[in-house]
Length: 387
Image (cartoon, rainbow, N blue to C red; front, side, top):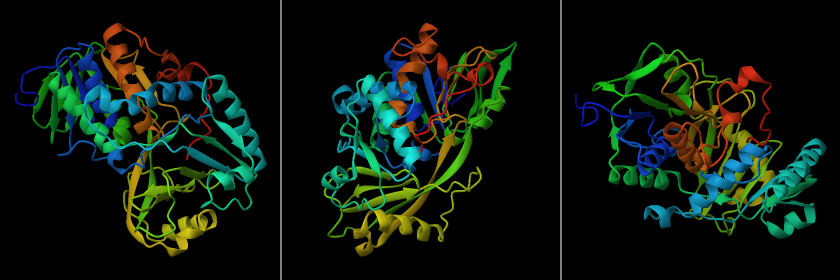
């Protein structure tokens, strides 16, 4: 058996994106025994983590997501200090542009909830939007919300940092090793079948991103997580590019952009596209993106497209993550369905799942509302602020 360097593990983490790396690190830091992370690609973060825009924010519509951000974001900001790994972080804020009355009303309520929980977000009238972001056209905008503590981080740097720290603490980080199945007996985890042989373990964490539904099925668990494609584009540098890294989001269209390498990074979702694992770039979609982009950032007229790629959101039915133990299978834990917010909530997910495994329940934050059984126990509360 060469999968783990030893013939066993206490915990196997399936998925080497930032969620899996964070869990491996926090488990190791808390004394979780022999931890082995399995990543089928030759590099960590090669899936959704490496394709995301890297934003982090407090501006959500539900208390649990706001609390996840309040836990996660200080860990992002202190990443270099805690792990000794420098990462790029720009805390220039998020600005949501609202052009429909129902959105303006909902975001006013969101700000009230955020403020009650200690988040210094604020509702802005169009005149203040123009002062805050002179490169943004507020034409047709009724108002907006802004939080200066939101920002842009470094998904790849943090993934590598977590993995390196986990390694130093004794974890096995195995790239190029694919999980093929989960072996259970009498309702308990026995181990993971891999391309390098069978890895015996008593605990398995599903951190497989958009592939989480398949991984859960190996343990006989029906996990409602589905992949959705998102297009991302960067431009070459241009003279009128934004001067800071403020993330601007046109909520009605989901178009977003921020400064990137002297140009702009931008993207947008397609509400009519069905779930799929399609990662091909649709050349016709750029026209739709630029139609909105030029309206909200007129300076884009002087920019040229540099790169285009796609990534996958792992969507849950209520746009909240699915975290923690699965009651039907002893030793099986989930960290899935982050619905586009996996990077920013990865630090919190890592420590919360590690606590749940080692102590029986998460101590830092109650994650019982995020467990899989919520979908059968009560009508879920949907996170409405998804872009």
